[in-house]
Image 1 (cartoon, rainbow over the protein chains, first blue to last red):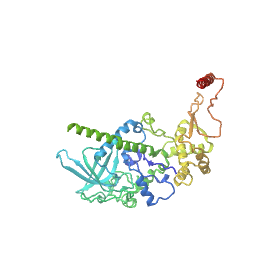
Image 2: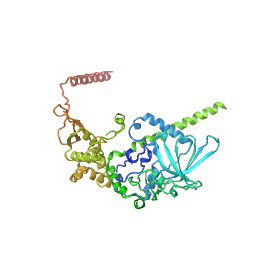
Image 3: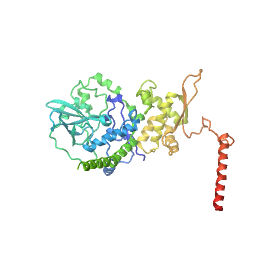
Image 4: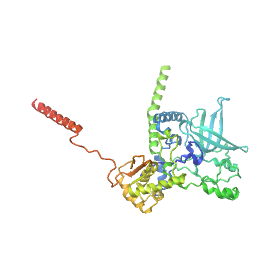
Length: 290
Length: 170
């Protein structure tokens, strides 16, 4: 069966996030899967054979996608940074710990631990936002993946959220966002599929950051929300904002197989050609000095 | 449907607004695509045909997955409003395009006259049974280009004969 690497790109209007890579779901939508039920073994072998490509490498169609030279050069810079520091595989919902250099205390590092609520941007400007609640105060820090002042990015717990972003944690009870700074890293076998974080989150009473009853997100406890927090007027207007046609609007499906092939080609080129060149040039400069 | 360089011209707008609103737009395009699947050549406004072309081609891509595929059947069920055409899509149209890789439709613009100023167009699936709308260029043997090519071919053959004779002589 033809295996499209289909990715569902939600519209900007739907989630009001500008060109966010959070909105690009890496999972294949249920619509296009073949009707053979995949066993655990097949999932494992698929994970082994498919090399993980971080979502900021996959640039959406449109203005930026048609400049192959710029994309290639940017990818090379991204791979150069990745050769220096290990930026691990993580998803929205994973718990990360980040060490950044402190400009006012050279040599020491600042640590922040949090749950990743969204990933934004593409290319070198790709970002991720970590959220934590410290002393009763909710704090979110937005880090750039390729920022040279970041010393270490460590995944303490690898898990995937059901939604493309978890901004609703701002309006949820603080227990869902509090993460202990000394959390022990949870080992994850690279061959196993990534565990899915499917806790239904209970929200605080409104006002909210967003009208969560109108957005179709699986991570929110809808029953609790409808019973406790919503006025009749809001409940009546809720169904007007459902968009059942979006599932069938074929324009929003992004077949990323070609882009992924380009990215893999660049990765292989970088590993084989560019790194060897840089190593040999380093060796020759060392020889000149001695 | 504008996805790549055209986005620069349209300032980021990907879709035309047809029928006043998002659900209406897809309903109109569904009707156009269903008509196209039934008749394989339809005439409509240029805007509707241009938008429907994208969806008609994607529908064929899905149909190629086969009618046992649950996802493909769901999409076909939505897009084709007259349900007697779903077997036609999977059994007639999808096998026709097995060797094609994308461009399954042709879009012709019809002339705009002072009497009929509406921008109309014809959208058709390739391989349809009707005679073609554009005249096929015939390869006339007495056209000047063909005469010159024929002369060149004869000169070349004579030259090869002479070369062979020289080689056999030496």
